[in-house]
Length: 257
Picture 1 (cartoon, one colour):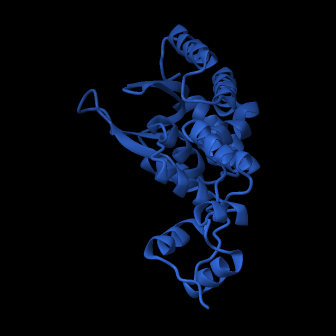
Picture 2 (spheres, rainbow, N blue to C red):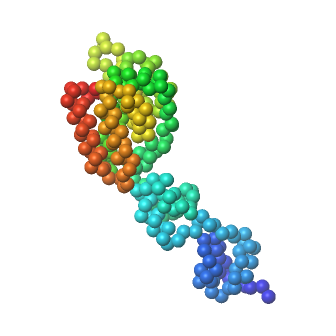
Picture 3 (cartoon, rainbow, N blue to C red):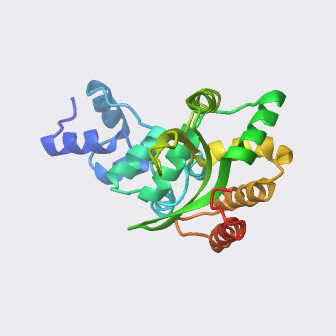
């Protein structure tokens, strides 16, 4: 004689069957049903086990404690049995939120394309940045706290030079520099503020720099600190390096030097 299922039992089955890990757990929710009956009814309703959707209490605690601060690769390492879509979906269900500054940082980091310079380009851009560029650490004040970021800029009145930089680096932005006098030519300022972009460029040209080599070394150390830290707070070493490069520029009497 077929087992009779109440509407309430069917709703329980639909809800718990895909996400339960064992028969014992199912029996806790449906104590009056046998395993053969449960399995048969699940088949009739086309219910399937969602292995990615099964979250243990321990895994949920890991997600809650690390979602805000950890990066995607770090979360995948901590929750090795989950794929990214499952992790992100569960975080959405739990109404977990990322810090806006951290989101912006990693978005600009991973969004930057790989930059591979030829030997000729390394020498060329080292000369351009030594003569027409600036390397620094910028600070912006926001509601979430101070945000520090590395920056490379090139200023020139030749738009074709700016176009060449954008074509090779495939990232960054440019704007017109306000003219001090109508007699002056329009200057263009090209800026790369992506951590990954700045890191790739400086790593390749640092040994060819002369005037700005010290700045490049400071910024590369800054990036190393930024990548290694956890959480959203500013690491004390970030502030120290910011002050170090700022005083270096001021000592030379030119913030863009």
